[in-house]
Length: 126
Figure 1: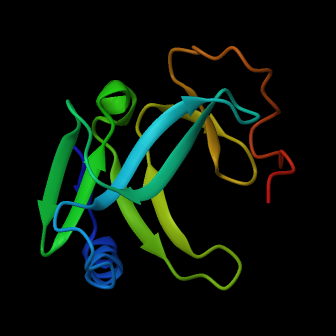
Figure 2: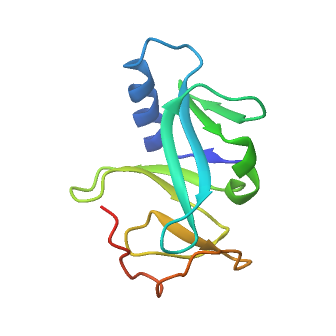
């Protein structure tokens, strides 16, 4: 199961309240092959798709893509408002390391097809 911090719940509820066009939309989180470390997170506000897992708390709705639940189980979603790095953050227990920009990661089982940069090295993604 995934969890949301109080700050993530607050910010996600605020984001979703501004999108009154859908009563089922949430922050949809998925993992796709790519990035400099092998896997990258994909986040967007969207409606759930068949098989997705929905986590609701305090007016916030997190939707986990059905094909990503294994790599995202046990994750904590947080929100940071740092000046240079604001947004939702994924704390993933399955990530052995991540790139310097924090958008991609390598799993603890080493399952990555993309070449990986040394831990913490920026991949050049904006």
